[in-house]
Amino acid sequence: MIRVIRGASLLILCAGASLEAQQVDTIRVGSSVLHGARPPLGSQFTESFARADGVDHPISTTTQGITRGRHGNQDVYVIHTTHASAAGDTTVGTIVIRHPDFALLHHKVTAAHDSAAVTANSGHLTGWVVLPDQPIRLIDQALDHPVFPIEGQIPWLFPLLPLREGYAAAIPHFSEWQGGEEWTTIRVVGDEPLEHGGRVLDCWKVDGGELGPPGYRAMYWVDKSTRRIMQGVLRGEGAGPEYWAITRMP
Image 1: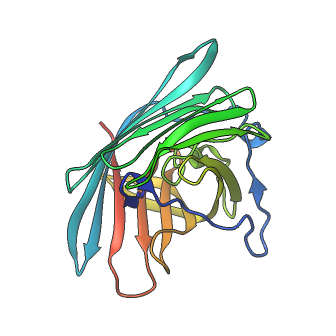
Image 2: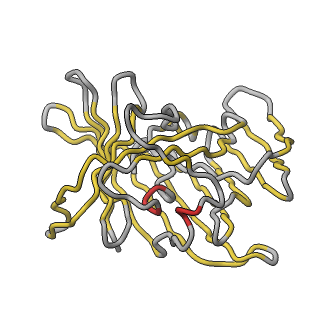
C-alpha cells in the first residue's frame, strides 16, 4: 500500500466515480458484491521508499494487523496500524468495522502533529480532529447511510472486491480529515506475475488512478490467492522519483 504523508494526514486517492467506456460498480456498505468477503486476518509489514536515479531512499515502515473481535454486542474486524516514518514520526491507527458489511464503527488516529477520532452509531457520527496550528474541530453530523472508513487508499477493502479482467469500481468512504465522503476509483488492467520474496505470485494488476503529486498514478499488485496487496508503485509522467511499497509477511 502506498502512503503519502502530510503530518499524519493521508493524501487520499480521489478519482471520479466513472471510467471511460467501462461498466463501473458503485460499492457501498451492504453491496451484494461484498457478501461473503473476508479480509485477510493476521499481520503484514510494508516498507516504503522513493527510487530516484536507481537509488532507493527509505520513507517509512508500516505494520498492520487484522483480527476478529467484539464491539459492544456486535461482531467486528479490528485493524491496527503503526506507521513509522524515516524521519522518526510515528502514527498509530485503529479501525473497528462491522462484520459482515464493513461499515465504520470507530476510527482513531494518533500522531505527533495531528490526530482524529470518529464513532458512528445509529445513523449519526461524532468525533474530533486536531490539525497543526488549528483549534480542535468537533464532528457531529447525521449519516444518510452507513459508510466505509478510510485507511490510506483503503487497501483493506478493495482486494475484497470481485477482481477480474477489466473490473472497475468506485468506492465512497468517510474521511474525518475532510469531514465527509471521498471517492476512490480502481480498475483491473490485467493479471501479471510478481517476483516477491523468492517466489512468483499470480497477481491482479490494479490501476488506482491519480494520487499524490500532479501527474502521478498508483498501481497495485494483488495476490489472487491471499487477496493481499503485495506491491504498490506510484509513478509520474516525467523524470521524477518513483514511490514504492513492498509488503512482507511475517
